Image (cartoon, rainbow, N blue to C red; front, side, top):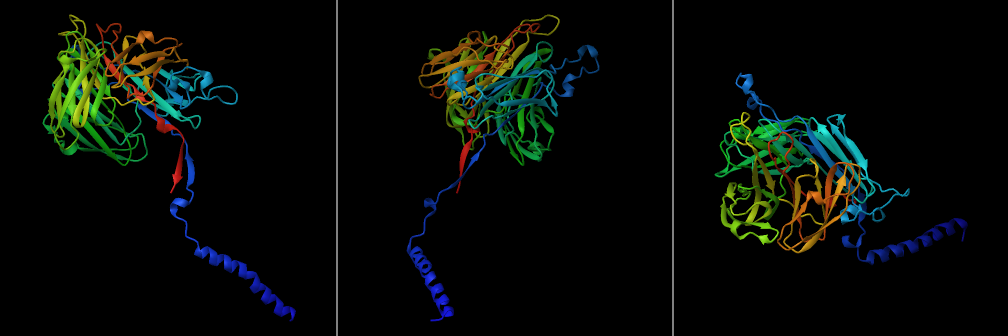
Length: 525
């Protein structure tokens, strides 16, 4: 056989193993999708961008004295105080312990802490102070902001980020004498508000801000006792990037004791809040800046319902659904439900609101629990009356607060303290017997002494602000670490600032620490 004949034969023989392998593979079953390993990628923990609404504002026509300088109205204070904190997901504070040894440390022995910036538009906030602590925490405070403030917090590691910020708008005297504590919120695509009114002397405005780069269209529904209001050309508002739009509720639903407002956006999320002020002739009636409520649900819990001597709180319910619902409410104190305050058989028509006075409660700080046979929104309006000041007002000034439904805290919650921690009480409630630990955070980045709290089933637990100690610098936030049991919490503050002629009043909810901010392993299917 010649060399030329041998080469083709060897080439053919060399292919036989490959052909056999191909036949064998063809006879094997094809792997299913479940048998294939999924490709994974790690999504980094998200940052937090919180927008504080800024000072209380009123329409220009309310500031006019009709040409008489002696009757000119004194506007609300142009300044707010902003405070809060950001923590890593591994901070021992979120587990109820102020322990550097139990907080994840960097290689140099320090506790990594989130980075925080505070800005007003393109400029830093004057007087802002930012300090990191030993427990993976960063505190921040600005004593005299003059407009909306943006707080940006960035995670430092894959353990995640929990951040909270709030602002205090105090006007100690004048026509709009009030204290409004409000949380700073991220832009959202859906929001609800409840409890503001439009009766004579009251002005309420929905405020929509677009911090993004795309235009947004907001679809708005206003609920009245008779059902959804006819908004005509005001039911949709376009908000251009970098702009703010306002809807005066008295222009679309005048003469209402209480309203509900819902907003859905298309195109981009919006930062939203609702502000309301009241006057009775020349007598100040108070003011509030409201943040969006948690989602509607068949059960709602409202801690920190402040009942002053001689005053009756008013429950406001809203039915966001398409069918009528029936609701009941109980008010809980340290001994459980107050029998005299029980109300049942409260009917709420679709898209409507109902106001229910809650007499028989006694004085103090209580928790309202609402149950219904369908999804419901709930808020309670409380009032305090100041001292009669002859020559300044016709009657004694009044101040009000609107406490809304609160979310379950899960393992931990955060509360900003924009007005500090004096003349206040933390209200905690759970349907089950459980426990919690409360830790105060200071402006120096330090943590206070942990305060243990026992919660009886259905019994409110109150933590006085005076018992929260151990920090240096002004208090900026609270951590509430729970043992589970569906804990809800809120803060009621009723200080008497110099020149205010008595107490002013506002409330703030405790918010869950954001577990979703941690790094996630995302599987690609």
